[in-house]
Amino acid sequence: MKKLFKKTAALTAAAALTAGLALTGCGSSSTGTSGQTSAAADGSAAQEGGETAGEGGGTLRVTMALSEEEWEVMRNEVIPGFEEQYGVTVQADQIEAADVVKQIQAMNQAGDMQIDVIAQDANNLTSLVYDGLVEDLSEYQDLIPEEAMGSLAEAGVFDGKTYFMPYRPNAEINYYNTDMFEKYGLTPPATWDELYETAKTLKEQEGIGRLCLKMKMDGDAIELVEFIRGAGGDPLVLNDEGSIEAFTFLQKLWPELSEDTMTASFSSTNTYLATDEVYYAPNWPFSANILVQDGGKTNISATEGYAGPEGFVKTLGGEMLGIPVGSKNKEMAINFIQYMESKEVQTTLMKENGWMSFRSDVYGEADEWQKPFLEATQKAMEVAEPLPHVSYWPEAQQAINDAAKEICINGADVKETLDKYAAQIADYAEKAGY
Image (cartoon, rainbow, N blue to C red; front, side):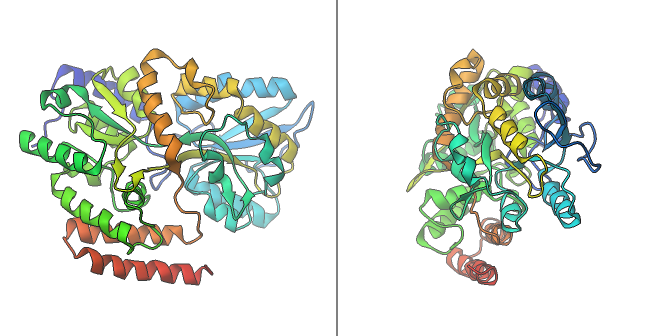
């Protein structure tokens, strides 16, 4: 039987966590890469007409997917400044990432766009772009601050055109229990070989797996893609040498992992770490606020993760800002995007919500306890790249998940299995016109 709530500190953390997880979880209804589940806010997306926003009046309609705590900061500390500066009212509503596309499609077809700015999961942009639902913002790309880190701005670029602007980047970092690592003489793994040895040692010492990855094998295949890319493979090819090397390693690693690997989400991983269910797991940076600041788990630290044979790879998550085609307030929407990208707003969101910033010039403003986690996140974001920007990615992603099930769980032959699913992906690409 698993050892839940093993000590008072864990109980304290779990209590704080329970409250926090009522508000925060993982992204959209699939998995999401923004790092939070969205709780119901003050109503759904605007469905009724409103005044056009302009200098000195009107309404700008914005959608985001935030927790209640995050909405409190947004509505009380961020939005009022924009309203005062431009003399407009901002109507900010809650829409999950998975529902944004449906809402925008319906309004577009009706010829009555009631949303001016969307904050959308960085890995759920493809259908909005290829279905012609968002504005081409290429003429405004020079407005992206020069302090933008790494290749974050490129996540909003499709076929050489800019459709989304950076706003709230995310990349998973790898949390570990310093007490248990010290007990067993371990250091956080920096390579695949070290990852395997760490998982093996923890299982030998504890009798069950204590190293957890996040591989539900359904929905976002973030970590599977990172393993593929870390070996130099291409997730859209799947049966190349790098992909074969990645899945061969995963098949070897699988028996040493915590059984929680297949149920791990943003919220459940926080619980596993808070209650000492697992001693190592990747998760989004906001976990640090829940575990350390709110839960008192000061024995939790984090690193940027581990490198594969061909280098260190992370997946870019978070949210980006776009403007739906048909918005009656395009210029004011651009003003809002610039405002959200400003150093002042980015600093507020980092300090109050624990969000990462795409700007390199705000990290000196962090509280002391945040700095180790921010340092790990900065290193992760320096190499982070989005999931593939192709219209058939949802189908390709499921093929990758299905291959992982057969190889890791059923012990299927790696090459034969990858050949089978690679053929499926190639077929999806051909049907999509690639």
